[in-house]
Length: 338
Image (tube, rainbow, N blue to C red; front, top):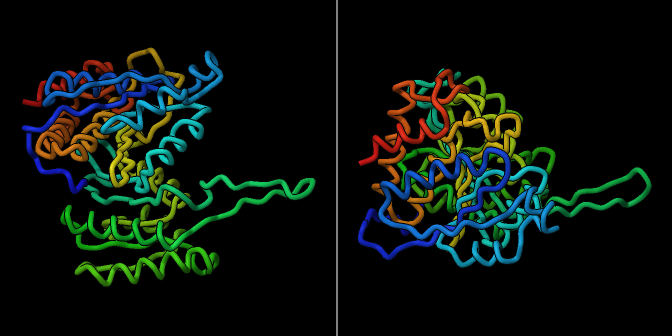
């Protein structure tokens, strides 16, 4: 995932900013951190507050000290935030300049899902599109939202997707767009992708986003790596979660030139918060991506294998038909990590 990933265990200690967030966030992040503490090569964890509860107490969802800690750290590990997600997550992505949102869609052994064995990755541009938040009320009952697509952002996300595919052994990259309607903005995105793709010996094609949604459900094997704009990537990655068993299995990585922000895709699940029923899989897999980013590729692969083996053995939380608690499932994964 990262050019810094080299599998070298003799590295300086890394500082990880840990933001539990709201609902089940602290539980699943805590479970992953426990594994890293027990089996990891040594990290300094800095626990920082943010989210709905923090805003209620202090008036700020993302306190300045938390932002400073996130900017100082080698990586940020985030749980889930509720109503303040835009104030916390989107702002952190912007401040850290994490222009990539990487969302793998993998069918795991032992998980009852639509497509066991599916392996594709959605590479989502993370800094612009409608998520720039440029909205206005121009008249009574009339509102607008401005979609921003730039050549610079399109080029670097295209290049990341192509290099990621090459590095991870994928042979094909598909650009997803709506260029037949959004002819100017997606026209630029697609032109830039095609230009950049000429630098790589990979199969490339493109698909309209509505067709891509159809084929993800009916024939996802036609895709390997999909690269797309912010809003489309957000929607399609949640669709992908439905193919492999749900959001509880889906990690994500927000990656910049120097910074990384790692978080499960799922939300706060307030209905089960504090019950010990939350599935920690997505958080632990997000920790695996964080390890890779920090340069511990061998440990990252071992942790992902431990998750795979645990799921295959049926040692899961109730959402996947098992009877383990969050902590018990995390312990079963930890036991498989040497």
